[in-house]
Image 1 (cartoon, rainbow, N blue to C red):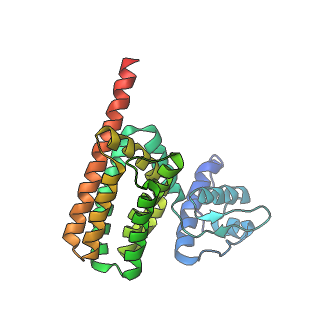
Image 2 (cartoon, rainbow, N blue to C red; image 1 turned 180 degrees about the horizontal axis):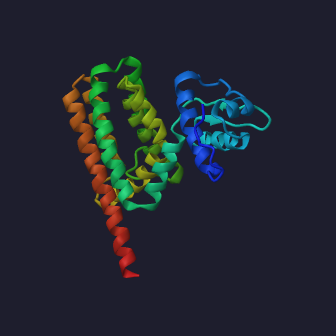
Image 3 (spheres, rainbow, N blue to C red; image 1 turned 90 degrees about the vertical axis):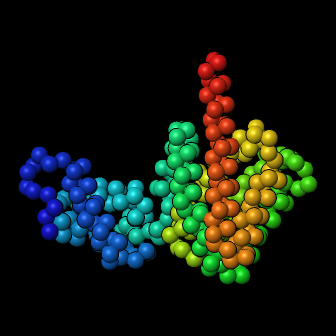
Length: 256
């Protein structure tokens, strides 16, 4: 099949992009993770383009996370992961304050649904996973009202993410679980930011634990409506924490 015309002025970039788009469809429809692509020569003949164009198309697909490349071997179809999505979210969280609020809006949609479904579907293993993450938050904080050191705060936020991920997994929806895996890095960064605002608003990490406990109790009770509301209240509180931090940064910048 010819994807580009015979015009010699067509550059490699546009030809490679066209090939990459069609090849991506074939990969998703016909190849399983771990399978190798045909050779460059075979693909060049199939698409009526040069091997250089095929090489560039394969690089584009590797950049999208579809292929794994290694020197001297055929390209291999990768297990799907959320690395590209994660990189995008991390970038906007770090560079654009609006990105923080965009992520909160997405979390409201996803996590309210996660909590609702978890209350209806969670099995014993799912409940134990949520409980374990909450216990990890308690252990990281200990008996004090604040973190003993940075390592303790990191453990707290890691367990906090684990709690939300466990709720998503307990929902029984594989797409929700996948999205949370992809959001791991940016969410942990957001947790550190929101904790600063939480403190500035006169709250402590114990309040965060209490909010998570309410969510867990509703899921344990199988009350989807209450679980959704508990999650919504928690995330709205998180949004207020972030607004506090952003406002403080803006005020500091304005005084300089």
